[in-house]
Amino acid sequence: MKAFRCSRCGGVNRVAKAPSGQRPICGRCKTPLEAKPQAVDGSALASLVAKSPVPVLVDFWAEWCGPCRMAAPVLERVATRMDGRVIVVKLDTEAERDAAARHRVQSLPTFALFAKGREVARQAGLPPESAFTGWLEQQLAATG
Image (cartoon, rainbow, N blue to C red; front, side):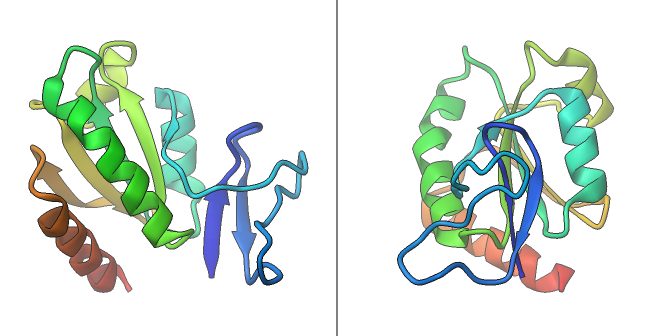
């Protein structure tokens, strides 16, 4: 099963299979669903982590962080490759200081993987894309 977070309404949509050549659409607002990183606030992150039927990869970042900006295109490609096997979101640690503190973010960028409501893996810093993808695939395999 795949799942996507709607970029318009924030709803999480389970998708068995979309017709060939078509993107699935949100069951709530009918917006086409895309596998792209989306910005979330602390409240939306907590809700998503608690309710998501697939693992959630969180990019804890800040505007002033050079490596965080370098991570953005990597996350775009990873989200596209994963295509609903994982939901990728970004949390701005400057705007959401309380959420960053709750998740014990001490360096940027930090990537945390959540499954079944709890954190299952963490990666601090930005490794090469192939290493990052390998790490994520390994963690997803371990979560079942």
